[in-house]
Length: 289
Image (tube, rainbow, N blue to C red):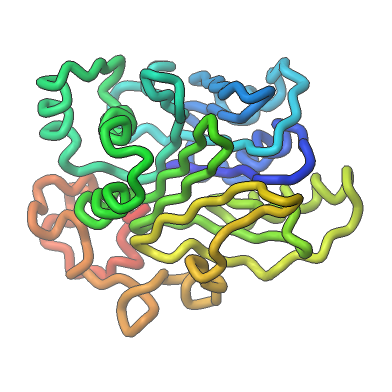
């Protein structure tokens, strides 16, 4: 389980707005913190094994950007090094990405990628996703196919062409935007979204915000800035309701059942060891996020 927060804006906003939002979703991880953003057409990636509060307080760059993505990590393996922290940068420096979820077949995919001489610096499954993306980016059809097959959770990717890629198979990713669509916010939690709204309004004045939405499951959405607007396909988002907040899409239209659990076929892989013979509603699984 990790946390993601960021924004796309037609006007440059301080990078620290996204970093401060991470401090409002600490339950999603405190093992490492990182941020990626565009500045003068260059892709900046800064990360550390610091607690999000410390990273935010000691962030020394007074940078502003139109697109910022921040990440707080809850380590799912023993590798807690800086190399295993997010964001991960492609070897050609064309894109970087952050991830919230697990890639269950990452060891097999890593082995295949190593045969193709792809370099690795950590044991993190997100680095495997990054190296795999190098082979299929920017082919949207192949990326969508990967999401449906591997169900990696949430991936947010930023490239040097000023395109934000948002990919979701499961796990939360909330979003909201103002009218007339000059600011687009996204985060793993509504608390982080609310905090970014407040901080932005202190800088640019009161805004009219749409209700909180959520990226639909098994969906790829892109967000860009064009003609003085933030442009995206609203049909790829649905309004976040009480039921979707509580259970998520699935059972009876509201929540996942055990049949949707990614560990059902191989229960020995379930990190929550004592639920091998789980009959839980997936919405209540202690490890689902």
